Length: 123
Image (tube, rainbow, N blue to C red; front, side, top):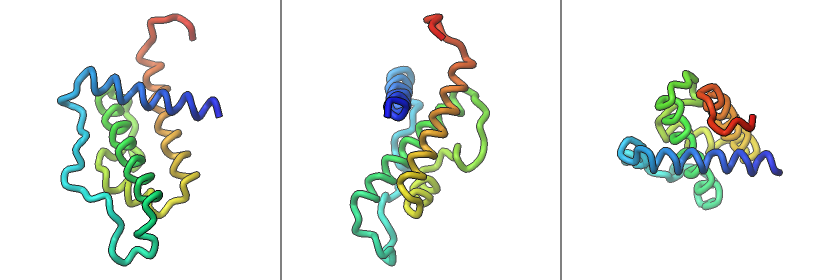
């Protein structure tokens, strides 16, 4: 539980620092993307899943932007900066797996940030 909490704090700190440091370069718009399920989606009216996937996709985008901004060098679908593939993938994936994917990106970013250095000397 504590590990999940600390990863969540890391993601929140990343978002806050990115917004405060360079708000104009952080892309928070959705470029016209609609966070809705298709008309033939049999579970299209399940608001909890839609909301979960919207938040997941937005966090994935912020994490991908951080990967590029801090030149971490991670590649692949996990690091796509477009909301659409993250939302679509999430839609058809169990929430447990979605949480694991988000945590995996967070851990990779933390490793990258650790390589960039620290000033508090408490490693």
